[in-house]
Length: 244
Ligand code: NAP
Image (cartoon, rainbow, N blue to C red; front, side, top):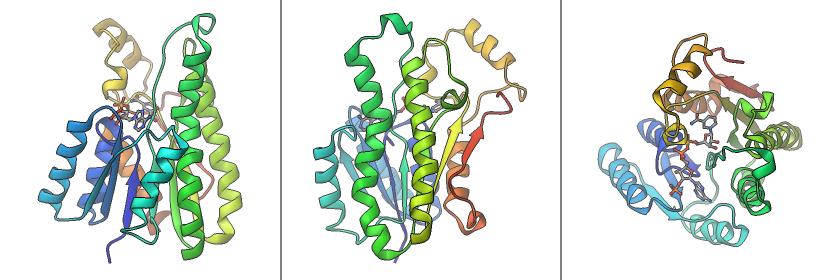
């Protein structure tokens, strides 16, 4: 039996790269998205054809508890448990805190933070029964330092970091590890609003002089779920080319 990995928000960017990495490593893959339905199905085809592993694809809003419950009901008709859960779905919002509406605040918190509650609530009982599992949360360096004009985003990712540390302590006796990756600037659609001048200025702040690649986040994820990191839990791995 192959191991199984679930990656939320895997239609593009970091999530997509993670899905392809685990497919390459012979995992069965569960992918998810909300708006990019065609991209989700194209990725499913790519995974099954190129890597010859099984792939389930769910169009599910991970911010919605009921929808996540429905998704897991179907997942558990295929698998007893999930070996690796990667909470990657996320959204960013740039703007002054004083302009941020209550709806925008709620939406950011629901997508970036509550989704992790929704997914973990469904995934953990089966992992505890199996006495094994790995949870990886994709956070952000801004959750550590805070970013001007990204207050809600920073707050949501700061909470993801605390959740990671607390949940790791709670689940360690059940042999389940919980870690987070806090990426710096990674070249995805999330940063496509930056113009060339802003890109150049941002790069100058990065000691390695470049943005990260989604594949580098995927490699780090794989390491965190592998035996090579078997004593590592409750950690927030900053992956930022030395930026903070
Ligand atoms: P991205 O290219 O914007 O992709 C976001 C992904 O999340 C998409 O697949 C999107 O799917 C999915 N998603 C959003 N809301 C969802 C929802 N409610 N339900 C299900 N899926 C949802 O972003 P990315 O750069 O790859 O970011 C991935 C993660 O890394 C995020 O948590 C982000 O905060 C974090 N991160 C990114 C950077 C960076 O520089 N890129 C830096 C630090 C941290 P649909 O399109 O189908 O809706």
